[in-house]
Image 1: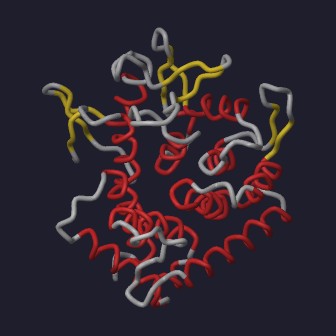
Image 2: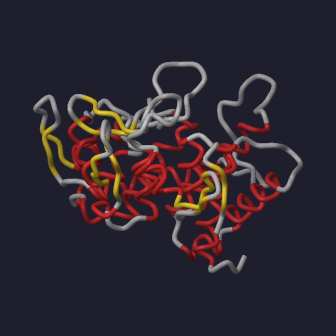
Amino acid sequence: SIQVTSDFTPWELFYALMGYGRDFSIVRGRADMSCQQWLLESASWRPLYRGSPLVTVLHGEPTFLGDLGIGPKSGFEGHFCQWLFILSLFNTKPENVVISLPPDGAPSSALVLVHSAQRLCNDVSDLSWALPVFAKWGERSWTNRFGEKYDLDSLADAHLRHESTSTVCFGTHWRMCIARCIADSANRFSEQTRRRLNDSLDRIVREAQTLCNPDGRFRLEPSPPGGVPLEAAVSFQAHTLEWLLVALPADAIRSEVWINLAVARLLSDLESPNDFTFGTRCHAATALRSYLAKTDGSR
């Protein structure tokens, strides 16, 4: 098993789950235990991390506690529904994912938090992590806490309209949302919405290919004065490959020269002596796992 200590922040542990693509052991004292179990059943409701549990009750709905405001991040969820998204990558049944709720550790499930997130959301929210979760695990239609009626098609429409404002992590979250919705849950959308999502996906894949330099590096445009810092360049490389390797079929990944150059570029960066941030390395690991899965580890 992979063993780390629980001294990592919850954000780091969730990102490690994403990077490994599965649960793993953490060490607490002398005992080994499941990372997912510790996060969701122990740390979720007790004030273990900076005096707060990981789950809070917002407007009567249980939800993961998010980082608020500007400045140094506290180690909680950074984006709406991101932790549910990570859990959805390697758990198949949300009703079986136990999450303990404050104040007394009452057992609940990831499915309850998904339905709560649907009631908390609206169409002006950043839906990049929420929409794939709702499409995979949520209700097809629902009413939020303001009495507004939504369904998966209307949220997909809102997401597509927000491209120019969804700029977090170089706009790659917006792209990952589309790739995941098509890859995991296309049949939950109407034929018209599927067509729009597929058209958008085809366009952004073509755009990514035009941004791939002959050495495999994706250009970050517009480039800041003085050029792109290496950390930002590698983070963009990892984030971009992460959604592309979900979007592209296996035969394209095996045969297209540009995508293989981009993967080789990322590997070269990771093998350099530079010390990249935890988040960059976890996104890179996720991309490389997807590459190996679609090429049978043969390249």
